[in-house]
Length: 75
Image (cartoon, rainbow, N blue to C red; front, side, top):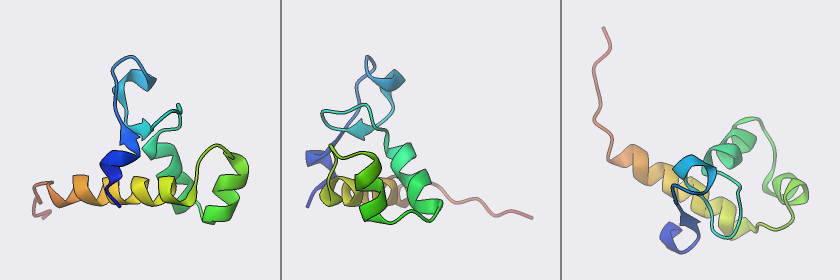
């Protein structure tokens, strides 16, 4: 699965933050829910118009962004 099939960014939607296509649900929100300990099923229950594949696309998008980040040594 390509995250590009499910994640989009438009300056007119949520100030250009990446969102699940067809929604105003940001990738950031989904990642924060996962980090907060919510299961995929719980997230889908909270936002029934997204799917497990949408959540996985959010994770894949985040991995892609981090992959291209420059790492800095912290003293």
